[in-house]
Length: 219
Image (cartoon, rainbow, N blue to C red):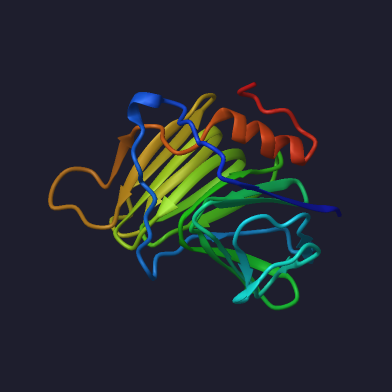
C-alpha cells in the first residue's frame, strides 16, 4: 500500500464562504482528536521539506517517515499533506499531532491546530475530540478542536456526531458542507449548533482526493 506526502508553505486559504471568514484555529493545550487509520499501514514518507516541520522534536529532512508513535509539528507558515492508503490528510500551520500506536498506527491526536481529511468509500472511521465523537463513512471532513469546544464540517458524505459531555447526537448527511460547533459545556440551549463554513476550501479537498486517485464530488 503506497503512502505519499507533500508540503506547501504560505498558501492563501480562501474560505468556502468568504463573508464568514474567521479564525477558529484553537490552540488550547491538552485538546485532542483521535483518528483511526487502517492497521496495515506502516508509515508515510516525506517528499521535499519546505518551511518548519518537526518530527519527534527534530527538523524533518526529505525522506523522513511519519509512523506510529511519532509527534509531528508544523511551523507558522507550513501545512503538510500526506496519504495513507485510501485516506488523505492536510495539517494546518501551527498544528501539533501525536500519532498513536507502536508498530502499527492506531490513531491520531490533534493537540493544536486543524485537520482536513478525505476517506475511502466504504471505510468507517472514528474521530474524537474532547467534546466530540464522529463516526464517518467515505467522507470529507474538516475539524478544529479545543478542550471546551470543537468545530466540525461535514464537507460531503455522512457523519454521526455525538457530544460526549451531554450525549446529544446528530446525523449529518450532505453533498456540500454542513458545519457545526460542538460545545463541552452549555448553560442553556443545545450542545451541537450550526456554524459557518470556514478555514477550508473545495480546492483543498480536490487536492487531497487527487492524492489517492479520486475526484472530489465538489468539483
